[in-house]
Amino acid sequence: MILSVASGKGGTGKTLVATSLALSLQGQGAVQLLDCDVEEPNAHILLRPQIDSSRPVTVPVPAVDNEKCTYCGLCSEACAYNAIAVAGRTVLVFRELCHGCGACSYVCPAGAISEEPRQVGVVERGRVGTMRFAQGRLNVGEAMAGPVIRAVKRLADPAATVISDAPPGTSCPVVETIRGSDFCLLVTEPTPFGLSDLTIAVEVSREINVPCGVVINRDGPGDESVERYCAQEAIPVLMRIPFDRRIAEAYCRGETLAAAMPSWQQAFRELFDRVRGLAAVGSVS
Amino acid sequence: MKIAVSATAPHLDAALDPRLGRCQYFLIVDTESMEFEAIENPAITAPGGAGIQAAQLIAEKGAEAVITGGCGPNAYQVLSAAGIPVFVGASGSAREAIESYKRGELQPTPQASTGPGAGMRGGMGGGMGGGRGGMGGGRRR
Image 1: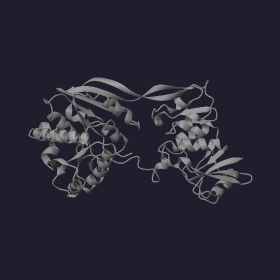
Image 2: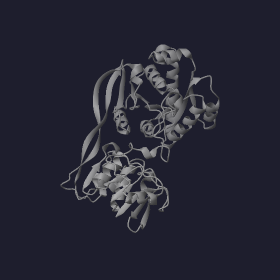
Image 3: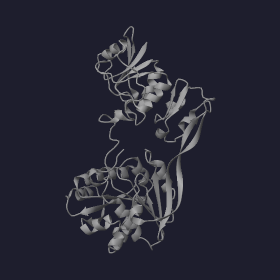
Image 4: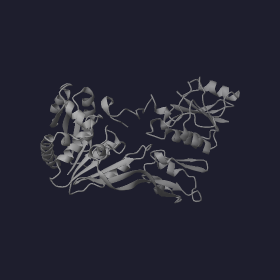
C-alpha cells in the first residue's frame, strides 16, 4: 500500500502528518517513509535517520560526434525542450534543459548522438529504528526533480506500508510523487489560501485517478470554506489537528507530533485504517 | 544585408520588442530596400529554451545581425555559434532601430545582456518562482 501526503499549499503540515503517521504505524508490519520533496527534503530533520547508503541519480544527455554529424538539424526539431540546437557547423547541447527522453539520438540519421549520464542528485537510504527511510536530494541549481523522485519511488518496498511525503504545490514533482499511489492524503488549513490550493490538488489527484481525503491542520481559527468544499465534493475529512501552541512548540524543537504527544498515535492509526478502507473502495470503483 | 529585429507587431513602425526569445514577431529586413518578412515567433509559448529556438530560426532565415532589447546566454550562444552579431539596448520603432544601426550608432554586445529566462518575467508564461511554506503558498512550476 502506497499512501502519498500532499497539500497544494506549502507549510500546511505534510511532513508533520507523514512522519507521525509512519511512526505511529511502527509495530504493525513493515513501514517505509519516502521523502519525495527532493528540492528541500526535511523529514530527516524530524526523524534523524541513520543513512546507510547514497547513490547518484543520473539523466542521459546527448553527446554529439562531430565527425559523423551532418548538421541536418533533425535532433533539434525533435527536441521538445529546445535542449539541442544546430547553428551553422556547430551543435550545441543545453544539458540543464535536457529531460533525457532520447528523441535526438533516436532520430539522428547519422548515428552521431550517443548518451552519457549526467548526475542531477542522489538517493539516500537508511533507517529510523525499525522503520525504513529513503530520500532524494536534487543538486542545487537543477530544475528537474522528476528523475530524482522516480529514483526514490523505485526504492518502495511492495510488501511494506509506504508513506510518500510530496513537495508542496501541484506541479510536475507533485504529480510524479502522487502517481501510482493507492491513496493521497491532502493536508490543508481552514483558510482561503488553503482552500484555493486544496481545490487544485484535488483536481490533480482526480486527473491521475488517485482517491484522496483531507486532513485539516491548524483547525480552530480560520473559516468553514474548506469543510463546505469537502462536503460539496464528497471528499472525506479524515483528521483534524487543532491549532495548538504545544504542537507548534514541539515541531519547532524538531519533534514529531507522535513522539511529543503520544496520545496522537492512536488517532494516526485510526486515520490509516480509514484510508485503507477508502483505498480498497477506490480501487474497486 | 538581412537583419532580424524583434518587434511587437508585424510591420516596421511597430515598437521594438525588448525580449528576444519571447518577442511577438521577428522582422527579417533587407537594409538596402527596407523590404521585410514578418514571422510570428513560434518560441513565444515554449515551456523553456525559447531563446534557443528563436535564435535557430533567425539563423535559418539567413539574418546576418540581430537587433533587440536584451539577449540571454542561451540565445547568445546559438547566435555566436552561427556567427551572427547581436545589437542590444535598441528602442523606439523597428524602423528607427534599423536606421540607427545603419548610422553605426549600435554596438554588437560581446556577451549576453540578460540572465536566462528574463523574457518570462512579468509577461506570458511567468511564474517560475513563487514562495514556499508559511503564508506564501507552495512552489509552482
